Amino acid sequence: MSPEIILGLIVIAPVVVLLLLRINAALVFLSLCLGSVLVQFVAPNSNTYLAEFSKYGYGVVKAENNTVRLILLLVPAVLTAVFMIRTVRGKGRLLLNALPAVGVGLLAALLIVPLMSAGLRYNIVNSDLWSEVRKWQDLIVAASAIVCLFVLWVQRPKTGEGKHGKHKG
Picture 1: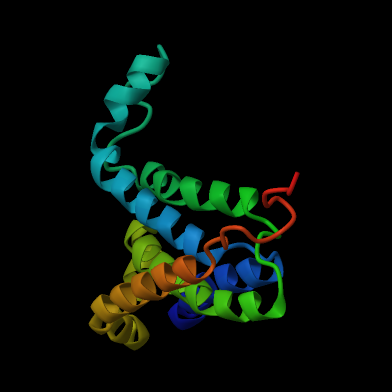
Picture 2: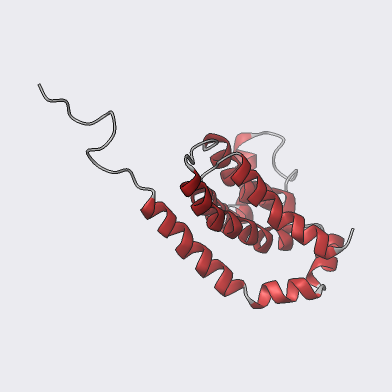
C-alpha cells in the first residue's frame, strides 16, 4: 500500500468515526495531547512501572518499544471516544464538530507515524506528502488547538436553561 494511502487513512479514519458516532472531537483532541504527554514522560520508565506491578514485567517491555508508546498515546483518546459516543447533538453542533475532528486526524498522523514500525515509518517519512505535512505541522497543531478550545467554549452549558433549572415554589 502506498505511503499516501496509509497516511490518508490515518487522518480520515478518526474524522469519519468521530462524525458518525457523534463524538466530541475537541475532547478527543485533548486526549491525544494527554497521550503525547504520557509518551514523553511515562514511556521512558515503562520497564520500572511494569516491574512494580508484575513479577514478569521487567525486561518484557523495553522503553524504546514503540508498541508501548502507541498504547500510551492512543488509550486516552480511545477511552474518551468510547465514553463520549453520541454526545454531540444537533446538526449545527455536528457541523461545528467537523473542524476539531479534522484536527484529531491530522494530530493523530503527526503523533502516530514516528511510532510506527521502521519499514512503514521509512516509507511514509520519505514521501512528498509527509514532507508537506511536516512543513505545516506547527500551523496544524496551533490551529487545531485553537479550534478545539473555541468549540469547547461555544458548547459550554447555558446557565439557568433547560429542565434542570430552579423551580418556583
